Amino acid sequence: MLRRLRGQLQPKVVSFYLRRFTTARVYQSCRVGCASGFWGDTMCAAPQLVRHGNIDYLAFDYLSEITMSLLTAAKQKNPEFGYTPDFIHYVMTPLLAEIKQKNIKVLANAGGVNPHQCAKVLAQLAAEKGVELNIAVVEGDDLMPKVKELRDSGITSMDSQACMPSAIQSMNAYLGAYPLARCLDHGADVVISGRCVDSALVLAPLIHEYGWRPTDYDQLANGSLAGHLVECGAQATGGIFTDWDQVDGWDNMGFPVVEFDGSGDQFILTKPPNTGGLVTVAVAAEQMLYEIGDPASYLLPDVTCDFTNVQILPIPGKQGEAVQVFGAKGRPPSSSYKVSATYANGYRATAVCPVVGPRAGDKAIKTANSILARTRMIFKQLNLPDYTDTCVKVIGSEGVYGPHARPGALASREVALWFAVSHSNKKALEIFSREVAPSGTGMAPGLTGLVGGRPKVAPVLKLFSFLYPKDQVPVSVTVGDTTETVSHYTSSSEQVDSDDIQPSVTNANMEKGVCSYKLSELANLRSGDKGDMANIGVVARHPDIFPYLKSRLTAEVVQEYFYHLIDPSVRDTPCVNRYELPGTHALNFVLPHSLGGGGVASLRFDPLGKAYGQMLADLEITEIPNISK
Image (spheres, rainbow, N blue to C red):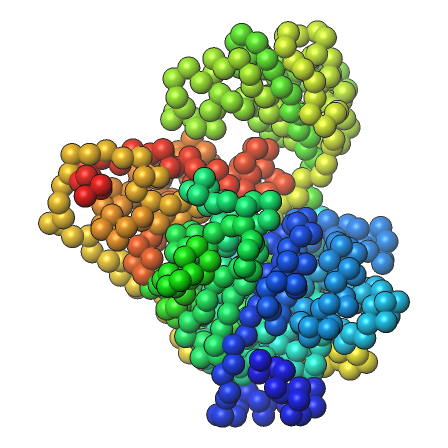
């Protein structure tokens, strides 16, 4: 590997500017594995990649907006907290010697809101084990010290122009890959950061290895696409795949590895040998569409990516094990960071109760309504206001499907009551929590108990996102006893408005058929979330099917299908957007205000839109030729 060759030929600290502006490059392969897609991912991933992945770099992605707020709260209680301890105790500590012996470099956003403490604890444990580590820290993303300044400046939401709320719990800028790469330039064995875009953990090693400049937009776009594919761990290797029944070995699921050759024009997505999972064109195409908006303008701190003409091809002899990916294009990034803040907005509690017997669904609904009536009576006696929101669903009755539920679904004899409420006063929900259990003796028969016991009262955290100038966010890297500020690259190039990119034209002369198919017979689907916005990626199973999808599966059709789940304030006007990706014969639908607030703010049992693709799978597409031909 180029990194290993450099280590033999020159000192570890490589000149940042000299290396990036030299024209002579030796292109060696570089393999980056991702062992974590979220805080709580399996502890089996890292040993698998270290021992069998033949990797040069190991990336860990732990953070979400809600995770940041929880880590902030933990640090407020104890100044030595605020990072993800799993990274230290369950991942790094058992593998320290092997990682060092194999010269694998580690990048993790495990620092949360306390990256220096995370580095300190890791250094202490490494010293105890006799392993010498050069640990680097990236900081600057935490903007909590600037809350008052930002609020006084009149900052507004990037989505609604709303003013910054009070009770901010966390506030972090999404940093890019160059500060992480700078740490590697200084010879870091482990790079610990706070908030950065997830894909930066993969892009940074590539910048370091190959000296990509800030203006190498296409290389940065392909590197970012690689990071985007693997940032959710096993989702890139067959996890949550539409054709789940074709994926074997879930107990030993292979975790993703991307391999670059240095040109930056293409890369390979694969997994360690003899592991479970599946890496195919369809799997990779699904994951590329996961949690994106406009694929022609995927905005990142280092580059604006265009994924519309990306192509994914099978590799001969590697069926189910690897694919080749190429075709991402890049443009200059914006001059601002996206900043996500979370703020407290009352409290919530959720009760889940199995109900069995004839008319189980009716019993569940009557039980929930009776508990609401009883607690409202108590609230009135105590001069407490009403609930701010309630959500009563009968799991097993297909209630989430709304008008698309199958006839008779509510007649199931075995269901679960999902009963979630929110309130501005914690005391009110403590009353609710106490009044749920008595339903087991004083209401309907067949209530078998409360899943997890008495409902727990928790704060509601909502998301507030805005743009903030990069030159107002000082970013620094610390390696050993040396700290330096990393300057921001800015470009004067004009941004391309994706609205000016014309969609492809559907062939008006395409054959009109007489067959009807469920959408899942014609396409693979994957859905996800960004705050209160859901997206659904639809990938044609064959290129010849794509024109029919473009013709039949319009934004209007999708909006009508999910009408019952979109906020009433927007659902009666056109709000769903459709984007085309001809390179992968795919469509991406963006559904705003469709998750009941999203995340912890939502009372729904699918606050992240994970089921939306599966729900759309049953949509009937008509007037299609016989696809068996």
